[in-house]
Image 1 (tube, rainbow, N blue to C red):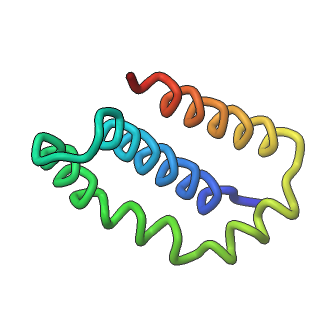
Image 2 (image 1 turned 90 degrees about the vertical axis):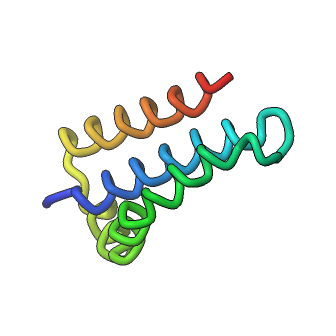
Image 3 (image 1 turned 30 degrees about the horizontal axis):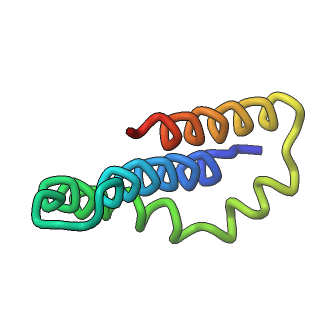
Length: 86
């Protein structure tokens, strides 16, 4: 089964997590406006990722071992990217 929808959700969560962490690291201020604008520019990514969330759930139910490894590595990479924001 194709896990593209699940991977899109992981990418969207990564982008959102990194941006939110950058914006909120020192309190929210006007200095965060460029990062907020970049986040808004990613709106298409979020819409595409979450419009088919039901399909992603079905994908996850039928993962084979290779897909599980791929999805797990993407989730781990997203977690590390969010964690790395200082």
